[in-house]
Image 1 (tube, rainbow, N blue to C red):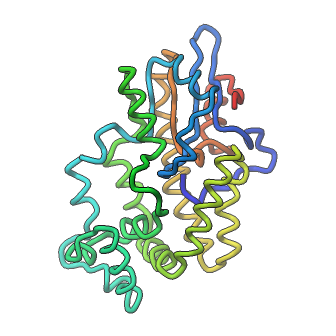
Image 2 (cartoon, rainbow, N blue to C red):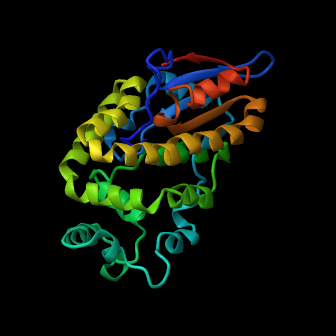
Length: 281
């Protein structure tokens, strides 16, 4: 879940909750769970309804496959074409500040100037957390593997990379510069997103993008473009990948909570497919 989620309609009845039952006559029930992509101990203590839904499932569907982090394509996909330079895009002194931050995170100094702007933006925007705490997504994947559940990937590595690469370069650079110049504000935004998730407030999650746009009017267009590429467009793909697995039932779907609310959200898409979608928790 990103702190720049697309806004939902005010009347969206999926404005609260993180766990939803998806059912259709003649099929065993499946469940959709909205996650948060953060390493924070507060998100790992799964509520009883979530544990129960997970225990009832035979298959686990998540945004990316289990081996994404070790995919050899990732390293090359994160780099600019030969002859291009991140420093020339960002300019001084912003690049020096950026390089200092990324090297402190463990990025090799020789690599920083080759990073694509969206890669550097995600890295510098990443909310600091305990190094010994895993993310909720990794935790759920581990539980699914332990139960020998069938793993369903809702997108491939190439597709997620393409989603970020498809963001216009001026927007990538603007977001990166903004992230470097407003590190404290981004931390506060990440905490607000986490707080909304802990309260199971999907409407608050959906409003974060609009609120950021009001706070930084010059960035509003870039936030909207980012949300279109990273949330809305990817939700469409995830929905398509769920068509066949949902017909079997007993599927536990874990995707970022930002993909759930609104007329273009996953829950409304499933309703339009004829499923009954009801909030459990």
